[in-house]
Length: 122
Image (cartoon, rainbow, N blue to C red; front, top):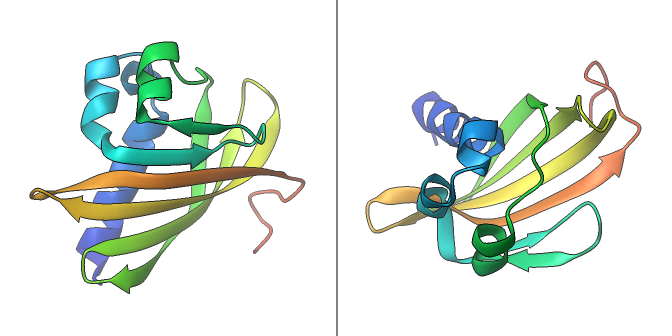
C-alpha cells in the first residue's frame, strides 16, 4: 500500500465525518458499502439503512494519527483517533475500506470512547 492510497482513504474518512456529508443521505450513501455495518461508541449496531433513514450523529470532529493496515489487495483497515469537539470526548476508531465496483467504500466502522489524547500513542 502506498502513501497515495493512505491519503485517499484519509480524505474519504474525513469526508465521512464532515457535517455536510453526514447531513446528506445521497452523499453518505455513496461512501457506505451496501453491506456496511457499524458498532457505535454507544454499543449499538447500525447498518447502511439505519444511517440513511435515521441519520448519523452530527458533531464537529477532527481526525488524528491516521494509519492504514492492508488486509488484502482490495481491503484496508484504518485506525485513528477522533476528537469530538461537540461532545467533548475522544474515540479510537477503526474502519474497514473495501474496493467495490471501482471505488473505495466504507464496509465496517467501530468507535470506542477513550481517555487518550492527540499526543498519546496507541
